[in-house]
Length: 323
Image (cartoon, rainbow, N blue to C red; front, side, top):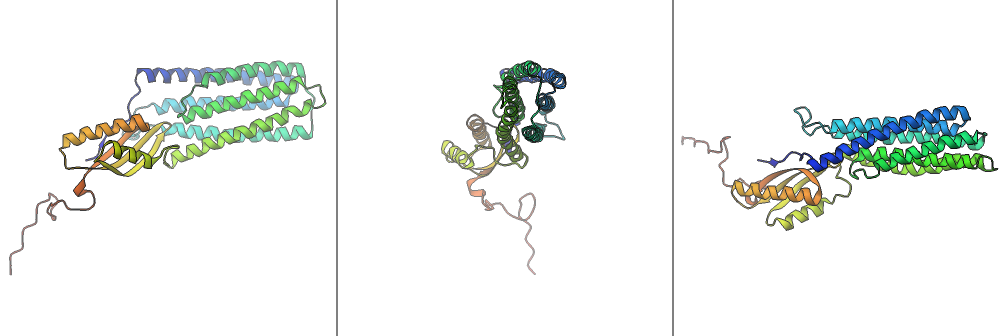
């Protein structure tokens, strides 16, 4: 029979990291609500379309952070009869939605930037600078809150990218405000916005690619399946692994199924061997859930292993009497 372990539950240290990151996401969401309100008011008063565009961008961050928080909460629900792997894949969907939102928001900002290049408009530089400084400080605080996010957590990575984009856009608004009274001042903000938007789109494309890879159950990025099989075969010889499948249920939650050819050993010995293989897969390859099916060397490729064929219980059918 196949042997398997469920995904390990986070220990106390890991649980503390999860709770800490949740608090950082919530704090970042509160900061972005305040930024959005300040930029809407400041943009209307200063006549700054750049501030209003950044306010719209910050509002998308509030939505992105809300999705990240909700997805993480759902992803921590234990497996059930309906969702035997839990709901970790909700985090992948949230990351994909956030990345697609980046495309939409960047497109809006790019369109506005092009319009401002063609039709420059004067702004109230003092008020614009004050609001942009406040927004920049809050955005930098959000970036710092999430800078140590788990590199395997695609959901948090996408939210972090939103924060970083906003910090860069706010910096562009500050530069534009400082040089608003120069001959090139009216062009700096839209040009900087286009450059920042292009850089962020490249990162968003990477997130979309990784999220889609998880949804179609591709091999995790950076995973060398041939190297994995070779490492198991070398470490646990004469056992041999084949029919290997590796994918990710959610960010950082790698799953493996495989057949393992072993010599004709007692069941207890095979269980001990598989326990060591699963521990090796977890420590060396970060695979949390491994289902291993044993195959006796002589029985793994279609041989009947000497068992009579005919009845379900393996006994030979009675011989027909001679006529």
